[in-house]
Structure formats: C-alpha cells, structure tokens
Amino acid sequence: MTHQEDEPGLAEQPRPGETKRDRFIRIAERRTQQLLLRLRILGNCSNRGVYEYTDEDVEKIFSAILRQVDVTRARFEDRAKSARFKL
Figure: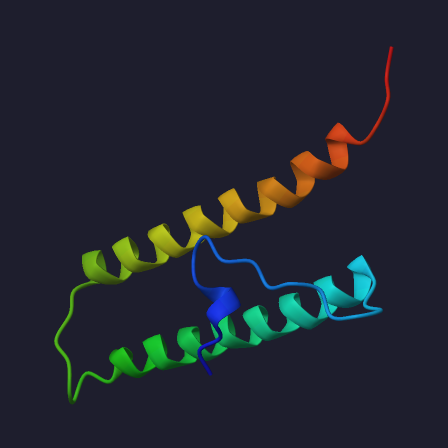
C-alpha cells in the first residue's frame, strides 16, 4: 500500500497524456482510501478488552485529527479564494 509518491516531499510525475484533473483524481482517491483505512485501524484501539485509555486520551487523539483536517481543508479553500479577482 505504500507508494513512494505519498512520502513527504516526493511528488509523483504525471503519466503520459494524463490531465491535471486525472492526476488529482488518481492520487486523491488513493490517499483518501489510505487515510480512511488508517482511521479504521485506529478504531481497533477502542477495544477495552485489549487496551486501557481515558476519555482525555480519546479527546487528544480526535482533537489532533480534527485540527489537521481543518488545516488541510483550509489549504484547498485558500487556493480557491486566491483564484478570485476582486477590486
């Protein structure tokens, strides 16, 4: 499941004849699927028969995840806003 282009600082080269949209779809779908899988795997830690954790632990985990979601979403929204022209 690990792809070299998904490593920080490495960008995958476009495939011959691939549009920017095609590249976005190909890469974003794979990265989103990987992220969702990792979240499901994190959910395995909720088994209290195997793990011990506090409500504070859970809050720290999900606060960190939600903060990063907000940061990532803002990157998409900032680019859309910067493309608009206003006087």
